[in-house]
Image (cartoon, rainbow, N blue to C red; front, side, top):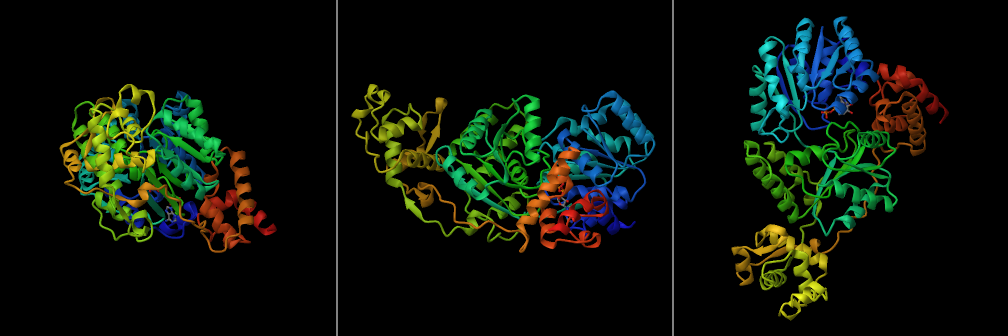
Length: 593
Ligand code: ADP
């Protein structure tokens, strides 16, 4: 078989995506490779396909067991022999895999990086015909990156011990500095460098200032996604549970996921989410790395992530099937304070120094009024045109500004007059003339500022407080006490004007948006029948539904409604192997429809 036949036969695709073929060719020519391509761009195919055309075994280093496991399952479903060696296998299973490797029965072997420091394993590798090594999530090699892993650093031993075996390294996120670092640390020799555009043309990106706890905004957003899969990220374990509970009370099938939960519960949630039994997972970042669920339609951040790399990776989990997906970032100035505290607590290291700069970039991005896609691309040293219609900044009409200087001065005066000893909520209570006992006890009802803030609601005052934090008019001290900065003092004196986007003072109603149909004339009824069949097959085989067929394949099937094998092979994602496994069953349903 040649390249294209292999592509069709094993993967069911009729053509390569831009850049894939370049990488495949470089690997076939035994060149080192460094590929940077966004999530969903199709990196795995770039190494899974060439090994099928080469003698020998490909060793894939990957940081996460769940990720490896999913890849192995997906490969086997496509009729490709793959295995993984990790702490998940017991001795007997490992021995079995070793025997298969020696017998030449495995094409792709997935391992965690620490395995490569194991003398027994290295010795085994030396006895096997390794055609090339793959380093997945290669940014973990770099201290400049956002996810440095100590045991990735040791991968330099590959070139020391296997000098003539090529290495192909892949990552979704790397600035030019990180790219250099990867190449240097792995000792790549004159590698073929392939950098894809980071533009995700099926992703709509939105960022908004959070109003109070953001739940009203969240519900507005979720209205557009009834019964669709999504991930909601929050910062703390406690808030994952609180929000999951809140969503359940609204009738949404939601679950919390964080590192503190028992393993069985986490696994069950993961499996239920992948199998579409749970609609929404509310998670800390512990969830999602390496998740291979292709039909995630939305990702929401309830607070600001600490870096743009994290943000880009997390939103990247949406829409891997290429269909439209949407993301929403809710943030407030308080998030920034919190993230800074986290960084302060890190042990001294070069990583810590970078962390502050990375946070600043994230903050600039959130507050920016530029095209979101363009801003992300620029951060990764990529220049693209403005998206025009795929982010809030490009689609929003020039937002109207309101002058809040007077309100700002009121708030700042109240902070000053209460002695710069209180948190924002308390200050607002005073402004709004609260009869809270604490206010009365402190005799703050006697101040001239007491009750002058009736004009705005509490949540509007919180927003004004946020704006002052963003502008650097206040800072937060110990115990969340608000204090004025020198700039804040100038604002009180009337030396500066403070503007606010008008929309920030009102909860945004989501624009009446029609549901998207992905294929013009796909038949919903047929689609539902096919989906039922997919669920049955998946359950019977104990595999996730998307391994049988992706949503995109189902939609294409219900649009084209093939009636024969030939017609079916024309459908997105169906090759010979998939047809052999599931083709007849689906044809059965289609012929009856
Ligand atoms: P990455 O590893 O870059 O995140 P994947 O390898 O998971 O991306 O691929 C993302 C999706 O793109 C998968 O659903 C895959 O089937 C699809 N895909 C990859 N290559 C092609 C291709 N040449 N034609 C059509 N779809 C493709």
